[in-house]
Image: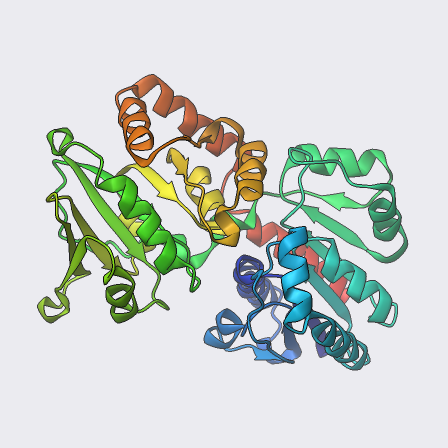
Length: 397
């Protein structure tokens, strides 16, 4: 019998997690000897263009122009979003949920409490399964209104960590934990591609985010990189997201003391080399996120979901404060609470930050402690299959 599922997600990282779960749900269907044609999936990304859904072949009920916050909440970003049409977006989203819920057998919400609230208000009392990617007891406890919402409207809350699951269960919320689906993201699958980098040098990878703010984040990172001593023999690599543009990076570098040398004609994963006036060198790899991380001694991150994935892989993570939403002072506090000893957020001048990172790299004991902390906070990969089976149960129950 055909089933209809409406997926509501609240950010690009959440879109990626939703796609991962949907791909695993299809595998569950095949194991149950059902056809993928027996499942109709409609996605409603609440932030952005929903490219991850479209690239995976899923229909989207609507998409939106990016708002200044890009889904990262703060009072300041909320006020900016209001000026850029946030209320109109909310009105349209409510209408779409009300319309699509007419035929939905299940609503899957992915993200924070906002998509749950929308599904509860406008979802015509259909079953809701919530993948709580943004909330953890490591950051804060759920409020009484949130607990009430879960108990009244949500069939199952799938948690990102075991302590949060146990906390919800104490309040009689039907909570479930099977692992963190972030670690099952297809972007983390290795293609065994040789990047052509020098394996004799310690690799430091720069992850600037996958959004338009990445170009500014790269400039911020390069300001730190040029203060590392060449005697350390580090090799710096930027993992540039496939949806970002090398020509835009060149324009962003125009007013800096860095020059970009285009290497795309060589047809290798290394698409550019950046050189500063003091001879600092950085390679740019377009895509190949997992391959860049494979030999990494450390990552300097200014991203969102990527930060958590890096920590979960057991790679020590250095956070830089910047102008982008994912690298604000508030987000740095968020990640330090969430990831605990897996992250290091040095402060001070760029020169002082470079010196602090160099000292960190000299301590194998500290690096191992950070790696262990990251794995402990994120848990093991493979949970998406069990989460998908739980979704299947509520879809067909």
